[in-house]
Length: 170
Ligand code: FES
Ligand code: FES
Image 1 (tube, rainbow, N blue to C red):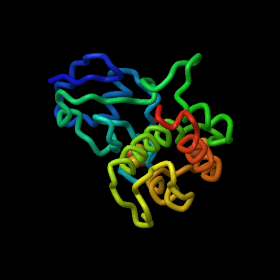
Image 2: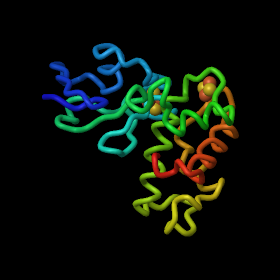
Image 3: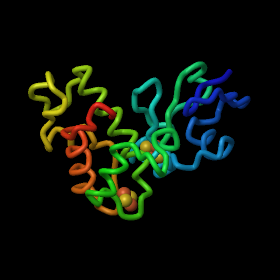
Image 4: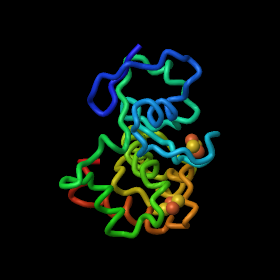
């Protein structure tokens, strides 16, 4: 089996018991994706599969044969940050940074979900994702915890990005 990781074809694991998270970190040495709880409760391990956010700690790597996966390493370069990375810096969206890769991958998946009309518990009008309220962004990002308590800055950064002229890059 194989998959595409950040634009590169990569052979998958031989061992069918390996999680996507462990395969990234221990075999591919893509350590940007973090292991927090390792049981689906914190969101630190969030990556994008074909544009949808998933928890890589709960995913067996062998399930993703042929899929296109994006980790934080695939989103931006030092000179050309992804707009959400820029906004997280500008709005103090992190302290220790441990949750940040998951927060940013999750935010990208969240925006895509809103654009597809996937409802949230507080959905109002989904016709225009750039009009997501703060409450709705909070609800849609509630699976990503920050033990440093940087949530206000995280939500500020996401809202600022999806209402900015760079919103189409998310
Ligand atoms: Fe996957 Fe916490 S490490 S949800
Ligand atoms: Fe430290 Fe979120 S910035 S856990």
